[in-house]
Length: 491
Image 1: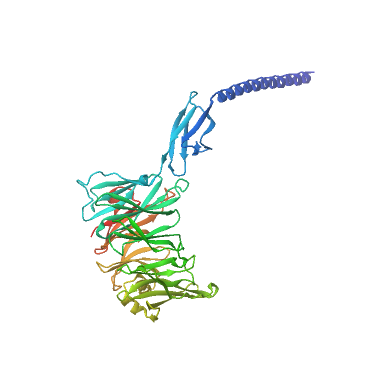
Image 2 (image 1 turned 30 degrees about the horizontal axis):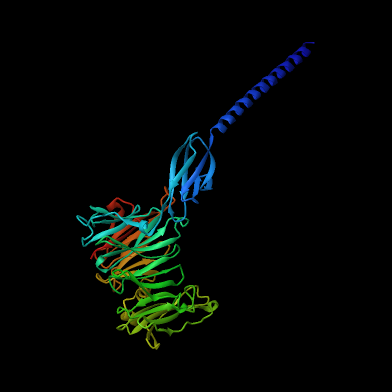
């Protein structure tokens, strides 16, 4: 009897607990329903728009729409980014949306030639522009000048925030800075630009624009106001080679593959009198190629002559192609280099040197004879390789101080200086040089990249190096600014 009462009592307790849980569940369901209704009340419909329309708007990094669009947003703060091809993007951070908000609209600024780069200085008074020795560098969207001591820094021009710029040359007499301006986002801008900035008169000239992939090559071989430039993709021929007169602002084609497919060039040289160009190329699409030939073009008459025929060697049985060519001997002959790689040699190239006259008569010469004929990087590079027994690349010859700048091509690339007789080699203690900009004296700048544990992106450091004294200066520490590109403008 007692056991039966105990069982009944336990059953009652279970029933009571179950009833309590049901009541609580009903209560929670009611509360949840009220919360859901409150959340629904916190939503409001907002028109996301732009001028011009058709921009891409990304809301809180979650929702992507095209303007104009009606969207539901919760009351509170939001982040919205706007982008459209050909227009400067905008980011609205912490935009307050309340129950009265019906529209969020932005006006986008069109990117034009005039807004890619704009001058910031209005006067030449009290300026570094006309000082004989200085540094030019790009930092945080601007082109700057600084004295060598880093005590005075002046902003010369502003670079569009949708772009990034690098300095790729300076004219003789240090008058023009040449800038290659690339897009940061190819959805916004799908072209890159070539500009010249006159650091004496504060003049900006847009020279050319081309595809966002590839790079411009520039030279001032024909004079301080005659800029030679070409544009090409990686392992592809130049789309053209052009001379741009910075005084008259007029262009003239030296090589134009659009009119003659034979004028595709991978390497070219100009005679100093401007009458001839010699180039390695022809009807080929990629380099190196066994079908490359050596040409001579008379720039006054337009006459094109093939001086050396291609090897036409089957690529399956090795490679035999012309690497480079340069005018020599009063510019009546051409020195060219041929690289031969036999099948199965594990890329152990044989380098041969030849001299050819303008009639196509060719003669093979020795390496030592090639070194005597021209101060060309290729023969010197090969000689250094044999002296040091190491794979390397000659970056430049500093003729004013008789120095060679070269980098080793091992796993840990390093920068070295040595005398032109291959003696007194100096390790500059610069590892993995990423870019080197030379001017016309013994001083040059070099960028290195180092990876840090605190950032996914490598850290870049620019150095100013004196080839005469072998002294280097850390420009990042000197100027106390992040440097994207730099060049020394001095004697």
